[in-house]
Amino acid sequence: MIDMREKLGTLTKEDVLGVVGLEARRSAMSYVWPAVGILAAGVVIGAGLGLLFAPKPGRELRADIGVRAAALREQISRQAAALRSAVDGAGEASGDGDLAVLEGSST
Image 1: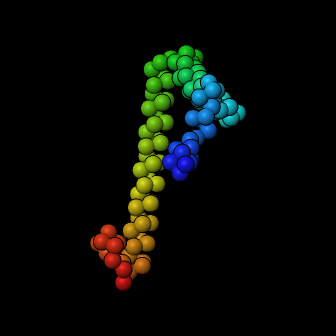
Image 2: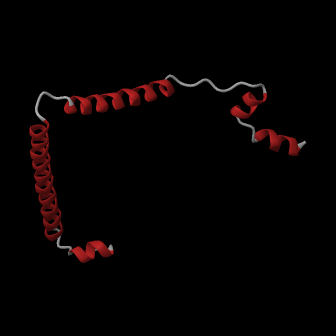
Image 3: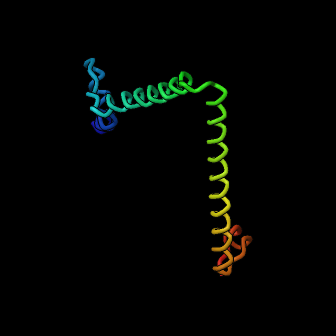
């Protein structure tokens, strides 16, 4: 009798429903998220096509994109340098050296 209880204790809802040919009901979100993903992909593709068929000539559009990409790269570099100096300054202000922080030792 104990052996039968152990076997029945491992059954899941999906096991029982599968025996009679049914499956669990999907939640509303399992329908919504794929639709949102498809919508987002459509937006990205539409924006790309809009850039390709923009009224600017291709050479001018590529130059504009290059200028914006360079500006973004420069901004990211400045922020990374500021973050590095802030981290280095915090380590020096606490009295711990970089080696001590990396080794995990505390004073």
